[in-house]
Image (cartoon, rainbow, N blue to C red; front, side, top):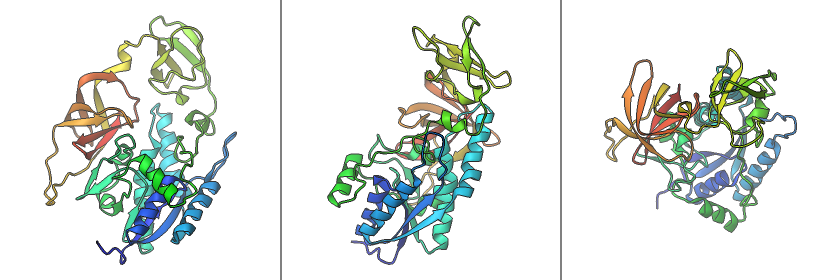
Length: 358
């Protein structure tokens, strides 16, 4: 068995079961483990109390039970600058950004990594479902929980310096390990909301920053005004909930005019605005792929693409352009994702990066 006793690992602990079991597995593997709670967001919102204090208490309790050192890294200021400000700027443009991807790129696998190294860490670890093998970012064994979609923009250095203890486990096995070792959060409810505001809806969160600005909802087929919305900034292409339009089949948002503050909707699921077989990408972030002997693998032109977390992989031809841009042409049509979301590239189980959808 490998002797890990001379290696110090700082593990991000959110108070949830995944990061707690990660700390447990690292301790059992013989590492010198330091638990770290990243305080990224603590502000309450109307009707929603931020659970950071409870999460911190849960993380501390687990660290005490495991008898590991525990620290708090306060990243609130940097988080607001790097994640919240980016997100708000994108929404202003009419895009639908993914704050979890930016959080991983700028905070969890950059700032946390840098501060941990400064404080003596040899490696970092998180409770993400992913694998780091031979410098490659690879899918987790649990395909339903795999989180490489959210990790595609983290640096190669961070991938090589990160342990993902849960990469080879299924979620039920993680919960079972937590229960067997008496961790209080074994069956704690998972947060399904935005990563920094608990379970609050994005619509409610945005209303803290943007004033309600009523505009028309127009039927794309008939040009008839169907109702009034709170402001085009609060809605996303493909959305069908929250429009408050009565009667019959649901309406889908098929287009937005930010300048006119107008939303266009359709009941026709075959509306061409809802479907596409190609995507234009910007802000491309390509990851290398290595063989087990460390040799670089050439980027294939035909890739598997994931256009949202847990979406089925789709085959597409990649054409690289200038200025970090690219085109994807797919074998089949699919429902068009919103601009600002990410298309992530895979070759077998290896994540090869991706780009932001234009």
